[in-house]
Image (cartoon, rainbow, N blue to C red; front, side, top):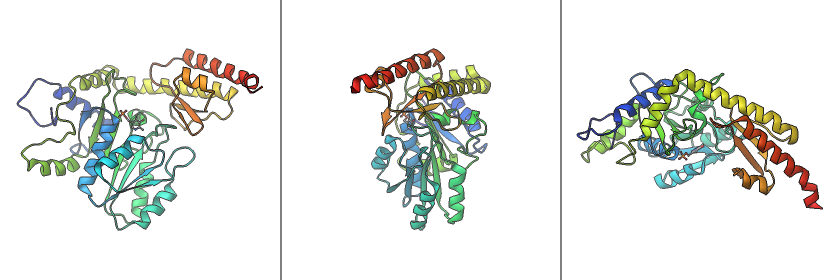
Length: 329
Ligand SMILES: *Cc1c(COP(=O)(O)O)cnc(C)c1O
């Protein structure tokens, strides 16, 4: 229950391990040694809600900017929090259009700026560049700004790839949310949010006044999910997690190469595990339960996926394509 870093009279729980999980990610995401805080959430969406909530409490008059490729939960969260917001164009890859971002911020430059950056969009796994966002603040002399990073899937392994994407606290993030049931494979939905402790302290004291340090969004929380995260990071360690990421990346490179042979439009953002394919025939989409939209579908080469599954998919896709002329006739 409640803030894992505040001792509670109720001592049956997993908060000691939860703190170790948060400490692990504070190092992985290069937070300042004494300036981090976080907790294990019910999922990536709650982490995004928390980051935006912190940002709003710090800058109540701010406008929120995010690319049009942002996960649907963010719109809902902004609605819940009643925060003014502006969608920014995305490039064809799914990465935010920095020119449109700079131009739009400059029109409203008297207002504080909150950006929701995607470290891996849902459809194409495009990564926005936090360093480029910081440069825009500098160019426009924006004094009050906050960057929340939605790293649900891709943020979970971004620290293991070279060159390292610009996404973490050292790059300029103020808070980061990830999912625990994606890359880390928790069998129960969960996630993690981590923020600068100095930000969290500002809202903690404002809640203090109602007599509690109730800093988490939900009161009672799942005590098992921190154990799953703790087990995975302890068992695998940095090296094991790196290897897990590399296997996924290798499989994605393989999938991209074999799929391209039958579908030349197939593509992938650099160092990602998401392979984008022109939307296949309905039967293939249904059988493989592909997420699709705007004429595209994708395969995400998650940990545990095998080459054989890619090959079976390629067979189905090939077959559906050779059947097309017959069906049209
Ligand atoms: C999955 C995902 C979310 C939502 O995460 P949940 O853990 O399902 O709440 C948010 N943003 C992105 C980019 C995602 O991929």
